[in-house]
Length: 458
Image (tube, rainbow, N blue to C red; front, side):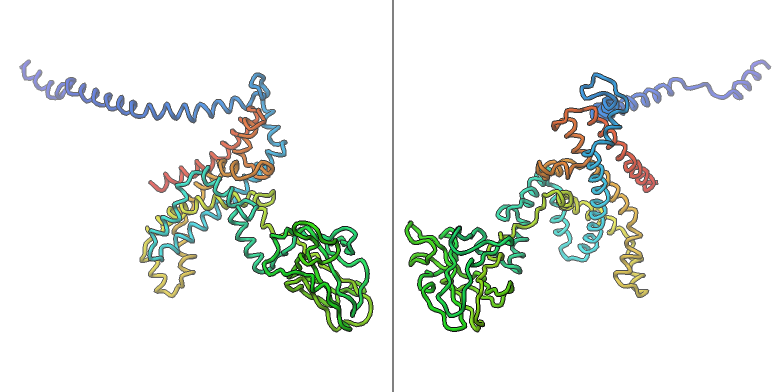
C-alpha cells in the first residue's frame, strides 16, 4: 500500500530536473555572448575613442576660456552669436543647406529619369558617378584652377572671355596713349581728341600714339608715312593714326616717319558742336577719311572704346560669387551619388502602374509628376536628408577653393570652427562651442534619417 502511494506521488510530481543537460546549454549561450562581446568590443572602443570621448571633451571644453584654465560658463556661446564672422558662417551654412541638397536631389531625379531612357545608361551612370572617386582635396584644387580669374589659366573664364569677344569684340590697343604736348588731349571718359580744330580740305591730320609694343601690332599694319603726306580735297578730311615710335631709335616726335607703322582697325570720329557727325575706321596704314563734310571747324576724336581694357571674365572667387562657385564644385562631386540612389529606387517602381497611366492617356510629364515623383518620395527624402547632413559638415572645398582674402565671405560653420581653434584664432573654447552647435544642428537630421530607415524596414 505504501509502495503504491509513493509511485502515484512520483508520477504526479513529474520527472526530476535534468540539471546535467541544462548546464551545457547555459555554457553555450554564455560562450556565444562572450564571442559577440569580443567581436563588438573593438568597434565599441573605436567608437568611444573617436566619437564619444571627443564629443564629451568638446562639450566640457566649450565652458572654458581660450587657454582652457578658467571656467567661463556660457560666455563662449554668447560670444559665438555676437561675432560677425560666426554669424556669416551661420548664414552661409543656411545657404548651403537650402541650395545644395535641393539642387542635387532635383538634378539626381532628372538625370535618373533621363538616363533610364538612354541606350548606354550604364556608361553614363559610371561617367557621372566618377567624381565621387575624387577626394575633396583634389576636387578643390581642380576647381581652384578652373575658377582662376586669369583667362590663360582658368578654363571657365577662358570660355566666358571667348564668348564675350565673339559677340562684343575687343580693343587691339588697350595700353595705347598720346604723348604729352603732341596735339591730343585726354577726356575724362578715356577718349582722345585734337587740341586744335581742323577743317576739311586741309593737310592730313596726324594722330601719334605710344604705348604699343611693335611686336604686338596687328599683322596687317603698314607704314603710315605716305598716308600722313596726303592732301585732302574739298569737303574731305584726311588723317592717320600711327605708332609714334621708331624701332631702334631716331625719328621725330609728332611726325610719321618712314619706319613708323599705322594703327589699323581704330575708330575715329569727326566731332562738331559736341556731336559726332561722321565715323571712320583706320586702314592698314592707319589712314582714315571723312567725306561730304560741311565747311567749318571740327575736332577729330579717338573714342575710349579704342583703349578699353580686354574683358577679363567673371570674378568667380570674388566676395559675391565665391559661395555659389564652391556649391557648383560640390554639385559636380555629388550629383552622381544622388542619381544612382534615385535610379535604384526608380528601377524598383511597379511598371504596371506607369503603363496603366499611359494607357489612360497620361503624357510623360503627367506620369512623372503624378506617379513617379510620389512613388519616389521616400527615396527622395532619404537622399535630401543625407545630403543635408553632408553639407552641414563641408570643410575641404570651402577651405581650399576660397582664396585668403575672401575666406571669411565663404566660411561655413566647419571652417569657422577650425579657423577659430587652429587657424590663427587659438581660441579652442569658442571653437568647441562652434563644434557643439554644429553637432546640435546635425543630430535632428540624423535622427530623422534613422527613424525613416527603421520604418522602411518594418
